[in-house]
Structure formats: C-alpha cells, structure tokens
Length: 293
Image (cartoon, rainbow, N blue to C red; front, top):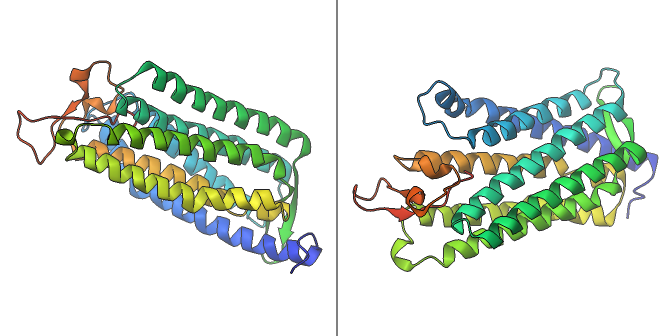
C-alpha cells in the first residue's frame, strides 16, 4: 500500500497527472478543430440559425480554452500555479454549468415544457452553478498548487483540492437526475411515435448515462478517498472533456438528423415540436424534443 502523501508518491502521481492531462487536452483540441465545419455552416448562413447555437459554441469555446490552459499548466515554463489553477477552475465550472443547461433544455422539451419539469430542470442548473461558484470562492482561499514532476517534465498539480467534492457530487447528481427525467419522458410517449428520431433520442440518452458512469463516478470515488490532491484531480479533465464532447456531438447529430431543425430551439407550442425525419413521408411527423441539442 503506497504512502499517498509521501514526496515520492506525489512526484509519481504528478507525472501521471501531467501525461494524462496532455493526452486529454490533445483529444479536446482535436474534437474542436475536426468539427468546426458545423459552426461555420451556421455562422455563414449555410445552416439554419437557432439561438441554442450560442450555448453550443460557448461550450466548445470553453472546452478549447480549458484544453489550452491544461497544456500551459503542464509546460516547463515558469508560471504562477495558483493563479493558473484558479483560472482553469473558472473555465471548467462555467463549462460544466453550460453542459448541464444543454441537458436541461433537452429534458424540458421532451416533457413538452411542463411547468414542474421546467422549474425542476432550471432549479438543478441553478444549484449546479451556485455550488460551482461557492467552490470557486473556497478554492481561492484554500487551494494549494505546486510545481510537480522532474527536471524534464514539470507542471502544476494540486496538494489540497478535496474542497471540490461538493462540485463533483452536484454535477453527478444533476446529470443523473436530468438524464433520468429525460429518459422517463421518452419512455412515456405513445408507442406509435416511438420511432425515428425518438429512438435516436433514447439511444443517445443511454449513451450519456453510460458516459456519466464511466467518467463521473470514478472522479467521485477518488475525491471521497482523498488520497492526495493530485489523485483528487486525476480524472477531472477526463470528466469535463467527456461530458462536453458528448453534449456537443449529440447536439450536432440531432440537428443533422432532420430536414427541418426548427425545434432544436425550445418549442413554445406542440406544432413547433414536430419533425419530419428522413425515414418518413412529408405528411408524417413525430413529436421530437431536441430543443437543447
């Protein structure tokens, strides 16, 4: 059993942390660059403009900034690690809040804008944002970040980051509840309309649920164990990247799934919630709730 707080173990964990973050940053930058065509199409007028594109673009922009900051944090240059870590925290918390909002908007649309679902979804997003803000204020007071690694490979790693446990629990709970609400809303739809895009929505919801289990639960476990600051943050970048990439890819896939994507916006009436899929004739529609994607 290793001594997690020993200098040798901290240096070893720091090296793994640096290499993992560099790998994740590369994946995030690749995703942002390789899928830039969709946004260009919207801004150049080749695709229909919808107000939710601002949320989509903000999520991707913050993800790109987050990846760039993670690379800077692992650089061999001299830097103020504490200031850099707080900047990364601000960007990551904003990114998590926008990702939750994208999921909430989709859930609201699935439930046809029912008032109780609307209030609950927005309430969960508000709680997530407030907890993130509170954790940021606490980080500014107690966060300790140092240079870690070797002479050839150095970077910033945390030594006291367990104050973020509240954020981990809130994000996991918010995503889990919203996903559960969305899946329940899809299941309750009549069988005759559970085809085409509804089936696509259901499968994408399952994908998101598996992602939550795959990347957010391990982050929660590591923070509960509180082995050391570096281990607490070891998989945080993986969770942020996974959630953001999944949210933005689902947004694009649903927009490209249909000929008429007007209801990617949050619908106000049932009429605006009808889609015509590629598999159906012009006079056949299905109730599609893809407002946030």
